[in-house]
Image (spheres, rainbow, N blue to C red):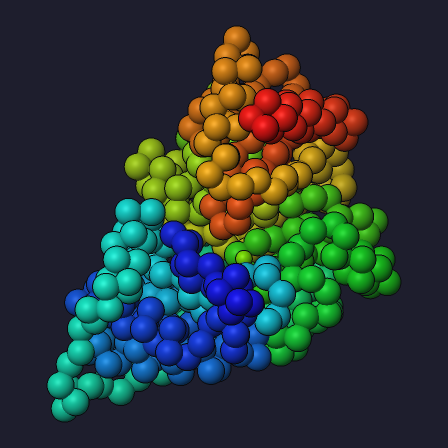
Length: 455
Ligand code: MG
């Protein structure tokens, strides 16, 4: 039974525990479905550093080749590097092999389309239909090609980033930077980027082994060793990435993690100070983004949670900057993927141009605290719970784009069903943690009351 419960097939791809639910046959069938979906096109494949990555990649390559695809293998690379390579090679799509911030025993396939953005929910449904029907394209054996290896993907990615930042200004500051790449996909790329930016770098967890020394999510509680290291090295700033290097968290020069939300706040402020335009972020990201955008008379558009939702909206609205409060920066001049390397370059550029310390820069922004909770709920009951909450709060200012978001003065609460598990997520933000906690409790009580009434 374990094998079934640990497999998650959803619009964000397929993930599971390797050797239990994520088997070579399943992986190969999914890759073959993608090859069928793209009609044997050119596909870029890359992976993070997990020890299972080599095996999963071989199964992916096998599935793609059997459906007649041309395949370019860039091997270990950040997810944004894979996304960018799809665009650079004018490929038809890509597969990123990574379970991002999940524990090491997990792995996953994420599907990228020709513009470097992940499949949206409609496209993912089409792919799932092909998989479930099992009607895969197979080519005759003499038409099966070989895999082409490409080792310039990281170099290309860094070159592209350097085109869009003031490299000379950053180099002049000779920043001392401490990094924690979490033994993940950023381990190879990040030191190269920092070298190009003239930084003196010191790092921990730099070996690309996929053996994580702490949970691979750059939350403050996982950054204790980086905090210590920043102080030891007397660094100007510390950066932490997750295992596939799309998320970026900052530790200030005093060794204090500033929280992932503020990576996006800082970058939005800096980009808008140079170029006015629309900002796109999701409903669960800090209101400090709105405060910063107001300062520049710029519009903020909020989308459903999920990278593809933000990326598609940014493209449509020609946004100048966007991303997610979980440290995911999307800077469209480089590409439409969440990119921690882009984030590092923009944060350093901002610091260099403002000639201040990172702690002062962060303190200059409006301060809020976010509390995130989840509550287990039978998935058949979740729509009723959300409906009841909409009724209960109908007289308040609401955003109903996804679940329900209640917006008050200096406080908001976003309640939404999870896309990946049978839980309701409650994200609250207030001026203090206490205010956010109180708001969360209020919602939890309403939900409990709803359960009781149904019994
Ligand atoms: Mg990630």
